[in-house]
Amino acid sequence: MSMKCEEAGSYNVAGSFAKSFGYGGEEADMEESSCPEEKPRILLMGLRRSGKSSIQKIWDFPGQVDFFDPTFDSEMIFKGTGALIFVIDAQDDYVEALGRLHLTVSRAYKVNPDINFEVFIHKVDGLSDDHKIETQRDVHQRANDDLADASLEKLHLSFYLTSIYDHSIFEAFSKVVQKLIPQLPTLENLLNIFISHSGIEKAFLFDVVSKIYIATDSSPVDMQSYEICCDMIDVVIDISCIYGLMEDSTGCAYDKESLAIIKLNNTTVLYLKEVTKFLALVCILREESFERKGLIEYNFHCFRKAIHEVFEIGASSQAAVWRPTSSSSNNLSGLKYAALNGNAV
Image (cartoon, rainbow, N blue to C red; front, side, top):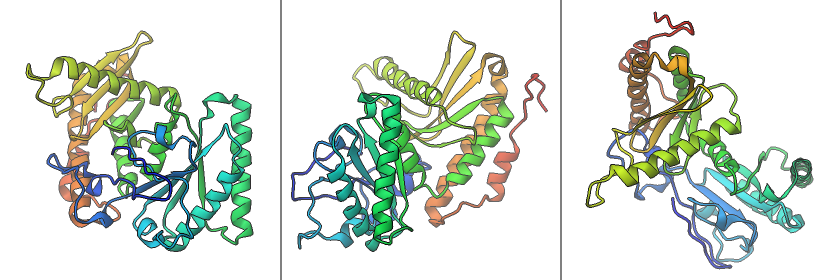
């Protein structure tokens, strides 16, 4: 998605992900379709200078919106929205922002109670760790007190500390997007099966363009692991743009042949491989585990087939929950197990 900024007093609907996220089919169309209600949509809101325009790869919803303006159509704006992100400048007096937050989520909740309400406490790079925690606690307390006073206790707000100067903004967007993916439990299960059968420590399923991870295995995510995987994607795309294109600069920097292996000096191996034209699997494993590369490649082949089937079935049936067919069960059952001692069963 691209950024679009509007002048005060006007508004625009945020960009949408490809239909059903478009992750399964190789020929998926990333352009807008005629059925916007089928696609998850995110609104990015907040006061002026709160930091919205510095947050890349999503559309911007202007902060100075007058909800009492007769030209403002709450139904049209909020009805098809999956998530509403409200950005608060942590380095500024956020009293006015909290008032605008309350007004915004109250209006949106009345139109669409199924919206996920997310609050980005932004520009925290200039704050100490203690100040960050104190600010998050204060914003959380005041925002929820306002909701309680308005008898809106059922309205749930999620809070994230974000900055454009580290990977926290990508981590926060990853959490927001994951809530909009109906296949998330299935994807997590597939990743758990894959890493347990391949001797892998951590695996992410990344949207290559945005560096948002749409799923990961059930083990905890630490920022260092996430950041190094993001950096690997940057390295792979940069090198592909330099050396992987044709002489006339045609071709694609990321395609079905994309594969990268990086060995670090601490016996850690990073492994990236294309899953679909939009997604990449990025794994972290130990050097001794990578000695069973053939086993990992075989298990990845089974994993990739299952991922394609998840999104293809989801797109065709538009069901909320994916149920494996006999063929997908065969794909998963083909996974081979590798114990830590190197014995494969």
